[in-house]
Length: 406
Ligand SMILES: *Cc1c(COP(=O)(O)O)cnc(C)c1O
Image 1 (tube, rainbow, N blue to C red):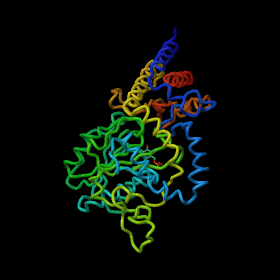
Image 2 (cartoon, rainbow, N blue to C red):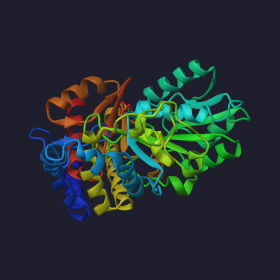
Image 3 (cartoon, protein in one colour):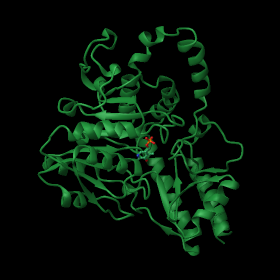
Image 4 (cartoon, rainbow, N blue to C red):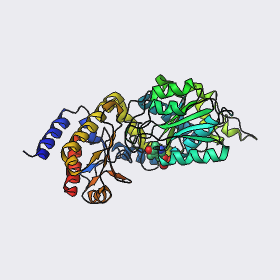
């Protein structure tokens, strides 16, 4: 048997033994895709979403019309937020909203944090963070006259607690970090870094875009302050589905957000003369919430509830571990380098591989129905969405990659 046949047989056994295998049928199939390895950029649609959207159009929207705002929609940001928080973030009720885009939510929560302590004029941020995070914080620093303290982290291992300690000081107001690095998939030590920042008197804002729905995040237990994330990646909310924002109960008493809108006011329908924010997490809502765009993620939350986030994390580790093994066997002989941590606890749910030809290879892979994504300069990112990806897809996708390199 060839190495490939061996690995394909292993994949089959892993799929047969996978306690979450049946969940793959819960997602819409693509006719021409043989290996979908990009669920970390856009999750597959859940089949049940077809019925949910159609019932929404006929029922809550078509039949109840404007009355649905009173009957259910007004509370959607906090109701969906509470559920998302409980199932995926380790967050007790009253601390999560679903609204805006991640970029806008980042702006709101960064501003909320830095305006909280005027004498603390430094923000800690790292050069490996996602572009929008860096761009937003750059803009706020210019707008408010703040100083950015840049960490230049190891590209594979990501930001460590020592990197953060080295730039923390009495003037640090906020530390902004991604929990899972969008490039290498390295997981930052959220509880330890949060504690280190607190010792220095700073708040931490965690970007959970590549964590929510795939990792067992425990915000309350870590004493986290603030977090944001997307819902179109591992939460399968669909293109442009809204962001979530987490503001801990404690932080809610200390910070106020900068986009004061009527939907986050204490009494929106009083149509009052000036703004008074609502109590609790509601004050972080700005304008009319994107209720329609929240519908698909509800179906994914149903699946996550059924599967359990701890079991989902186990499958994620098994998938990335297997992808690394397959890459070692099939791709390392062709000069491919692993640029993600090997240690299971330090890996998110995607793996980054580097090779000088990967830009061209990715384009050819898409033509044959193998869909990873390319991250410049030379990275092939293999995203493994635990509920919808099979071990067979991992082998299939990386074998096509090997054939193109050969
Ligand atoms: C995907 C992603 C975003 C996307 O922000 P949008 O406003 O939804 O476009 C932001 N930050 C990180 C870390 C991401 O991975």
